[in-house]
Image (cartoon, rainbow, N blue to C red):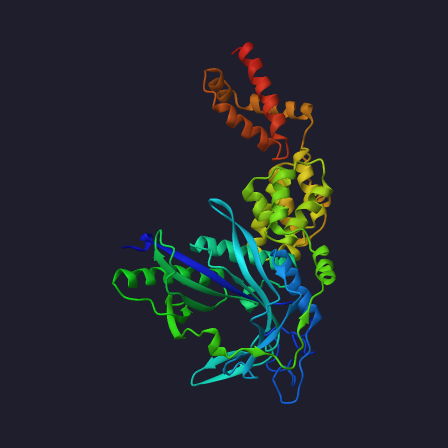
Length: 489
């Protein structure tokens, strides 16, 4: 058998830090653990000193509710925090406060867009916990920074509903987009604010029996997620082909070598010796509180994508990229409002084409862009009305991308206004035809492609400022007249 004769079964656990100002159970500030001085945002509570008492962060609970409700989960009226016991240097208490038997929410789903259309991935549970510290390994020793210890962490666990790396990437991308829409997570994966753990198994195609699964830990990029799962599917398939068994274990991913590595045998729930956190009361979420949070939810990505397709007649692809980020979708609709006379498709093309190219080159998010939605809308309007050419429009966009400002000011300062006067263009056409009698004769002799060369000469004479549509109309009329009344030698 080969890998193609097996079916992969994949579930994903996603850990997302919440954008609260303080930690999950204490008043320590949440700081950027990649920038702040180590061990400066710590206290006796988040480092687990004896005699201290944790207190639940209400804002973290509200952020978690946003996500749970956006994922169509059933929110528990009562959930319980538990101690997850294990020893590791980045865990100062010797246990992690998490939720186990009674999580905040269960039984939701997320819609993903794959090549075959949209499909649902079920969400098993959404629960709150605290993050761990961070280890830094040096030659011969390790250092630990507890700034991240105690930061509110949301764990989102899917059902094993995915069967390819394409589906996994679509799910992970959609979930990141949702978290950013809800403004509960920055989505900055380079800083580790979203981390993935993939549970992977394979089984013979057509079988309903699950194979032995492995868990790949601490994946912090889409690239690592996709490559590690693809490798693991192939590795497990080769083992089964050779008549060997897959061992249930926890794996790490070596990005440089492109392989998964065994870290330890897979723990089961009983290995963590869960028991209710004695220092925290049960968490009660009233129906009124949940409904208030639901009412404050923004329009979600899948709903906005559907609306863009229906209202603005955008293709599925363009609607998808314009709604992937809330800031981009807002920018687009604000640009439309600034130029309501312009086709929504034209504005979408300028954003997804020219503006995205500039943003990618500068490695900027749209929030940091100097081009305002109003300026973009006005620019597209100027191009579509014929006030400036498309080429001039691109030059103007590049200039205001660098320096800001309004397109009208750049057009005026650089003399880019398009020439639309038919009489002026007629004079240019007449001059070009008089200066190029040989090419005119070639056209009259039947070489029609020469008209394109003559068009270029007129555009050159107008220094690129003349309206191409008007040039073509005037030039075709002049050539047609010469055909009907050939010039005398």
